[in-house]
Image (cartoon, rainbow, N blue to C red; front, top):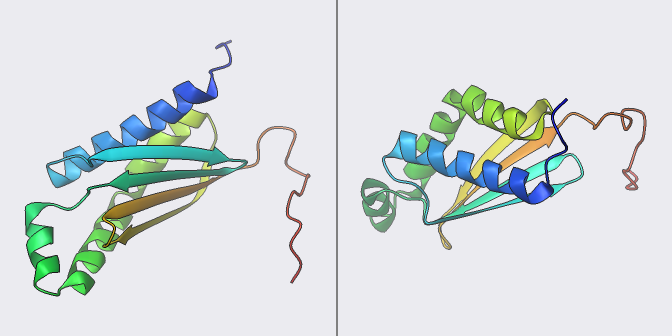
Length: 129
């Protein structure tokens, strides 16, 4: 049985995985990456993400085009992103959302994980509708 991994090790592995995927797909990695895990949610915030071509399009007022292409690309690679998170956390990803922001230059990769063992029936949601 594998020993329990420290949360910091998992966070570093997740950040490194997101950087590697971006580098492989866009030809350059983000300038920085930070990952947070809150209960069953993983959030990776990447900074300085845009390629020179995308920066040119942004300067030309084509943010809509950059956003659309990034979204299509992330959807096409969803399996790879999910696999990286599942490998690092040992839990299945049940939802994935990817979004970009232009000023400041950021990408957000958000993953919802299956409930942790022993938490399947427990509800931590205190909101009402």
